[in-house]
Image (cartoon, rainbow, N blue to C red; front, top):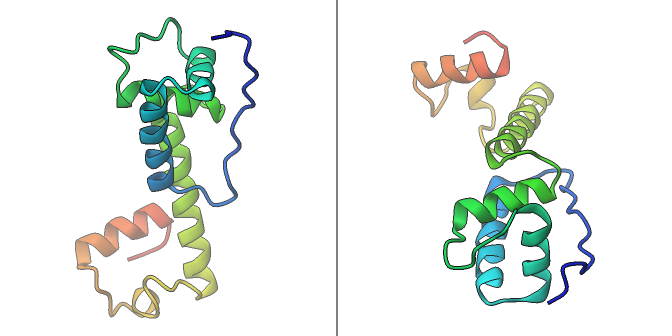
Length: 127
């Protein structure tokens, strides 16, 4: 296999999903273990001396994070979590949140007081 196989960096979608990224990491791991050329090239581009016999899911997540331009999986995850909270905040503020409906703004929540307080802190609003 050629070490110079061109691999283009990945681009996050406008609304990234942590579940989708986890799925991509599992697929990258499977494809790398299956010795697929593109997967091997991507892993080699972002991982120093990858050993297929020891390459695990956490390694695939690190490679994926680096392919998206992040230093590590935790930093990618933090970015996605922040984007999710920002979208939720925007939806609540706009009154268009389908997940919580009207229960969040009016206080008749499916969340208990503790969860509402924690969500309020996360959203920079009052409980």
